[in-house]
Image 1 (cartoon, rainbow, N blue to C red):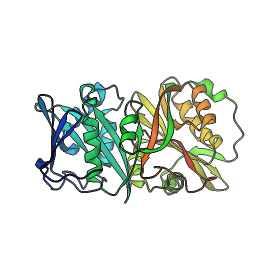
Image 2: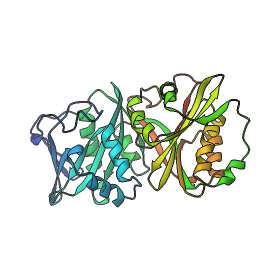
Image 3: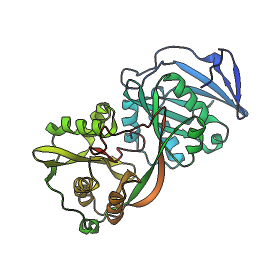
Image 4: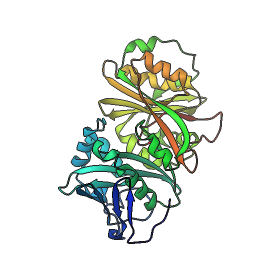
Length: 336
């Protein structure tokens, strides 16, 4: 990213970014979050046409305004979904002159040098004016030296590519009314016992997730586990696969699902389908998981949309072993 001296007025796609108003200082609520990099108190101002945007610490903004923004662009996040992300990470909100939130970006730090970027939202009238790029550049600036990962919507993928993101992997959003007919779909016989997860299993879940993603995501699991129901597959007295299911968006989401094989992933996901038959259910899975995707479709969760997993600096999630545990379903597109 190019560096500019303080006081520079930088035109970007019809925008004027006045860098001279930045003031170093602690971000409010920093002790609650797990974001990284330097922090700014009042961050920047952006002039678009005849009005001005002020960039603020997202934790200083009313969560109801954040929810209103995501609803306005058709994103399914509930108030509680936003609250989880605010507790997990840090971010920025662009606010107009009358206090409306018109843009956001967040990041969740998993390792000292890795952060998951999420919730990049701008109102449609600002999308072609460069507001998304402005938010992303400021997020990069506040986390200098960090490797980033994200899941890009189709609309935002071009922006991320222009910022240097690569290492692309297609992610399928499968959703719909869960149906018990999916329970009758043929699958390979899986050895072992599927049972409900217990609190004493948490260390095993973290171990499997670390092997599957290459990151210590214990911060995320501390938020996910209390609001999730889990299933584990035990083989030879060892947990070898697991799935979580929690309220999200229009209903419930299955994820994360971590297993060494798609058959094992199906085995730990079936109980969630059965428990939520007749209600809305969603799962996000890499497109390479064709057997698991087929199971989701047979269970009423058809492919509704897709996103692209991307990384800046390196691939964001790399299993530690080619034959070991891997992500079969994401916790969510925001969390990864």
